[in-house]
Amino acid sequence: MRLSRYFLPVLKETPAEAQIVSHRYMLRAGMIKQASAGIYSWLPLGFKVLRRIEQIVHEEQQRAGHIPMLMPTLQSADLWRESGRYDDYGEEMLRISDRHGRDMLYGPTNEELITDIFRSHVSSYKDLPLTLYHIQWKFRDEIRPRFGVMRGREFYMKDGYNFDLTKEDALHAYNRHLVSYLRSYERMGLQAIPMRADSGPIGGDDTHEFLVLAETGESEVFYDSQITDLKFGDRAIDYDDHAQCQAVLEEFTSRYARTDETHDEAVFNQIPEARRRSARGIEVGQIFYFGTKYSDAMGATVQGPDGKPVPVHMGSHGIGVSRLAGAIIEASHDERGIIWPEGVTPFHCGIVNLKAGDAEADAACEALYASLMALGLEPLYDDTDERAGGKFASMDLIGLPWRITVGPRGLKNGVVELTSRRIGDSEELPPEQAIERIAQIYGKLSAE
Ligand code: P5A
Image 1: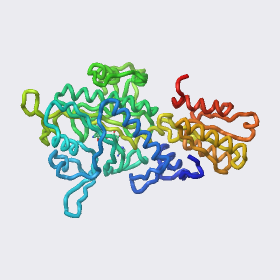
Image 2: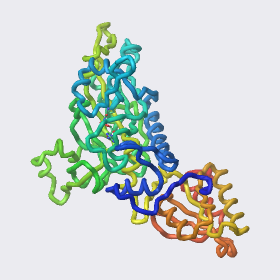
Image 3: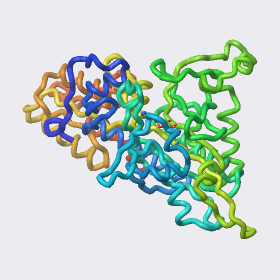
Image 4: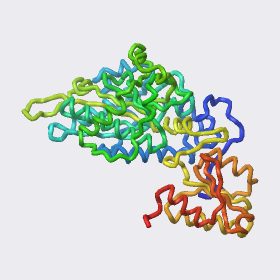
C-alpha cells in the first residue's frame, strides 16, 4: 500500500477522552473512531489488525477440528424465554421490537440460538462429538463502556459451542479449547494465563478465563509466579487425543492462578511467599463447561446407543477478538507508539522514502516495494513528501515491526537501512539483503 493513496488519519494530539495507552494509540494511529458510547468504526488500519487476529482464531479453531459457521446478530426473544435467560440477563441485553411488535434482541452471546440449531438437525449420538463456532458482533449494554475497544458495547467475539454425549467427552472439548486458545494467543505475541474464574450468566462450575497481565487490566488476579514460565510453543498436538489435551490442561492449570472472584487466601498463602503475585489482567477469553443446562431447558437430546433420548453435554468458549486489538497494544508498546508482534501486524514492514521526488530514491523504493509484494508480503510505502521526522514519528506510532529507510546518501553506497521497531537498532545493508531478511522473518523464503 502506498501511503499517499491510503486512509490513515493519524492524530498529532493525544485525545483527552482516552484513559489508557491502547485506547490513545488506537485513536492516534487512526485505527478506530468512536461512533457512539462503546461503539466503534474500524478504520482501515484497525480493520487490518482485526482481520489478522480473526484469521489466527479461525486457523487455530479449525486446526482443533471445530467447524466455522455464521449466526445472525439479531435473535428472537422466544428462544431466550425457553432457557429462562430473557428475564435473567437484565439491562445488559439490548431489547428491540420489530414492526410486528415481536420481541427481538441484539445477541450478547449465542447459547440459545446454537442449541436451537442443534436440536433441529441432530438426533443421534452418532453425529457427536460436534463443535461449531462463529465470529460475530455481539452487543452488551455495559453500564460503563470504557477504554475503547476493551470494554465496548458492540464487540467482536469468537464463540464456539460443543455438543457431546458424555461429560467426559465434553470435558475433552473443554481441554481442546484450552489448548487451541493457548496456541492462538501465543501466535498473537501474547502470554494469556488460564485462571480459575466465575461463570456469571453463562452458567456451570468449570470455567477458566484467559488473562493477559497488564496494569490497566480490569480484573484483579492472584497467581504463582512459576506460571509465567510456561510456554505452549510449537509442540505438535493431536486434538483427538484425550490424554494429550488433558496433560496440557494439567500443566497450565495446576499452579495457583485465579481471578478475585474465586481467589482463596488460605490456598494462596500455601505458595512460597516469593512466588505469590497479585496483579491486574485483561480477560481475552473464557471457556465454560455447563453440562446439560441449555439442553435440558430447550430439549436438546440425542438418541443414545441404547435407543433412549439423552440430553447433550455442552460448553461454550469465547475469545474477545476486538478486545484483543487493545490487549496486544497494552502488552506491546513504548512511549512512541505501538509495537506490533509480527503475527498480527497490519503491514509486514514500512518503507520510508527520505527524499520523495529524487529519481534514484523513488526507483529504489519502487523496486523494494515490488519485490516485497512479489514475495507475498504487504509493505506500507511512505511515498509522501512529508519531512523525515514526521514520517518516522508516524511509522513509530503505527508500530510496524520493521522499517526500511531509503535515502540518497545510503544509495550512493548501495545500502538502505533496516530498523527493528522493538529493539530500535538499525543496520545498513544492500536492498536485496533487507528484502531477504524480512522474507525470512515472515517465513516467506523457501528452504534452500
Ligand atoms: C463463551 C462464548 C461468553 O459469552 N458464551 C459464548 C460465552 N463468554 S464471555 O466471557 O462473556 O465473553 C467472551 C469474551 O468476550 C470478550 N468480551 C468483551 N470484549 C469487549 N467488550 C466487552 N464488553 C466484552 N465482554 C466480553 C472477553 O474477552 C471475554 O473473555
